[in-house]
Image (cartoon, helix red, strand yellow):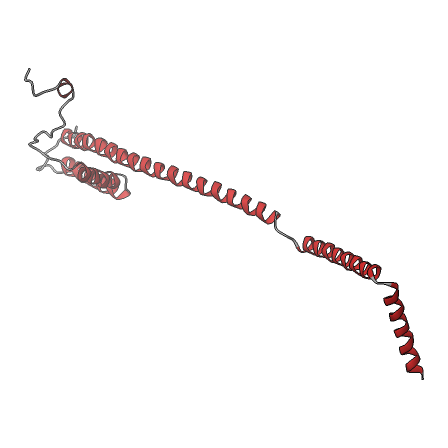
Length: 190
């Protein structure tokens, strides 16, 4: 064993391309198979096949001098067998390609459904958050009630301040104010 190879390199199969004498484009063959399968499934194909069979039988039975395929119609049976031998694999190939497309489409549908579900769940969470936020906002009634409470509080504070002003007045000042009030009344009368 040469020294330049490691054990793992010898255990791993080579991935190099092999030379092929005949190269086929699998996708092109699949597209062709689908076209043939689609044609074999049409009424047009059935009509043409019926016309060919009727003409074949008519020429071989009725044509006395030109009968290339006598009564058991072995050549016609061989043609049908050959056609069936090619039609069945072509139809299967077309079905396999359709299955592959369906699988890809299904995977894409699943991915979109998962995205839609995630988006829906996100929107539901956002909506719940908005509902909670709206539930905590100040309503008009709440604000009116709070303003009424503040107004009552301010009125009580003003009343207390007024009471304190009346208590801090001296009796002389109060008497003077009373006499001034009485004097102004007297002066207005005279």
